[in-house]
Image (cartoon, rainbow, N blue to C red):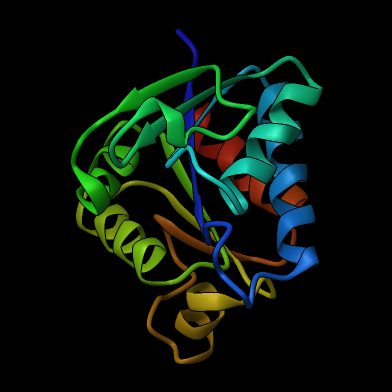
Length: 166
């Protein structure tokens, strides 16, 4: 059975979303596919699209849990699942995951991080990507202890994820 890595982060409307965060997300997607895991995300733009784009470079499988309709899916989503739950779909994105990786983000990502902590899902935060991830790390709102890890790169994030997937 394939393992699921959920990737959470800023959507395409985030004006503060950096090219570094997008490059990191794409790298994560490449690595997830390389290790034969499935990408699950919110299915829209920004970090979600970059991750799926990376996964498709390695023929990976991508699943988008969309707020309302299939038409919202980015071009790299293989399986578009409209939830009609709006932001309440964040619970589903996290709940189905074997590991959760967060990059940059705003309130929706913060919500997914909270669900990961509540559900005791392995959580990996990539610091230096901006948004709520950096805010949480800088303000000591999360600890770098299992099941939460603060890392500095996509490669380091995938290494931690693989430890959990064993």
